[in-house]
Image (tube, rainbow, N blue to C red; front, side):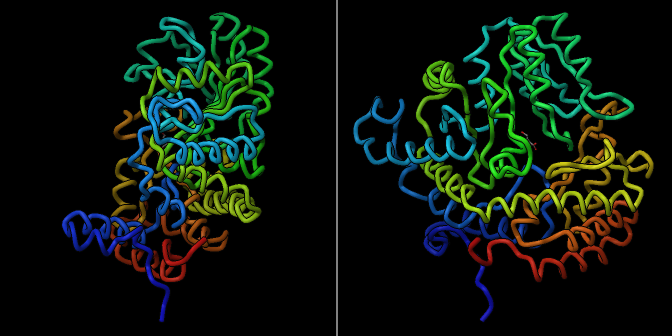
Length: 421
Ligand code: DSN
């Protein structure tokens, strides 16, 4: 008998009680098992994480922190939060951890609330060069409530221009400097950012939403020793439930905790906190370090295969879990390439490249990442084939059926949710 797919806790019960919604869960499972998932910010949690998410801890109101809640009956969920906090501190070598933020955006909002007042100046990477909405985009609270100065990458190297960061910091005297990105394939030099922050007397905040799992595993240099505050997500390379977290120095612990609750959030999602604890526990194991090493090796293999097919990697390659591909040489927009890949069973996202002439809804680029395919057991050899398949799907939309068959062949061997991790 072959391995049985894992449908989530008590799927049969849900199917009996609410077949309509059960079908949605089933269809989503089939969608993700039936195609290649190359979205750099996604991953497949373990069944143990899903079990914690589907638990009765979702019922509990627990505003406050362990031992000082505003509701009775919190003695059990307190244990979950203490375990999560302790594991997060150990995983990242941080003085203090807050595991309550509902998301990376909530974590950033709380971090700003801990360090800034409305109208204060912050310096962060432009969204159009790889930053994040919450790093000062005009359509986000960060761009509306703060005086935002943005830095970017150099046109020639497509790498962060540290001279520009320093010049802007000296000129604008920001109260916070933010380092971190969502589509920057290279490592950031946190020591240089620390030096600039010290020179102008700014707080240094690192948003490690993307590489958190790689840093936890020690596969890329950590921002934790350098930054005053580190925000992260738990669902990307870290492979936990959807959520956020904050690490900080002892000096800022009380300010960060007050910023998360009661300033930004009310009751924490205790089932999510418990699931974060499970994921941190998994990430503390040696197998996770091996996984994270493979994520990076796989991203390199994928990037090389795309480059060999004339799909130019921005900055010439990758040091992380993701690559950003400039499609201008092919004359295909990011939006069109995303559609062509979808038709061939490959899920990825269009993405602006630095100095992109196209608007954000169209773009000239694609972002690809390897957290999901690595979790389902693929290695560099398979990622070479994945690169070839992406290139063929983008270059030859008429051949989508053929590409889809080859995707299916790969997935026959490597399927998510067929076994425990
Ligand atoms: N949307 C996330 C990403 O895909 O990188 C960031 O919030």
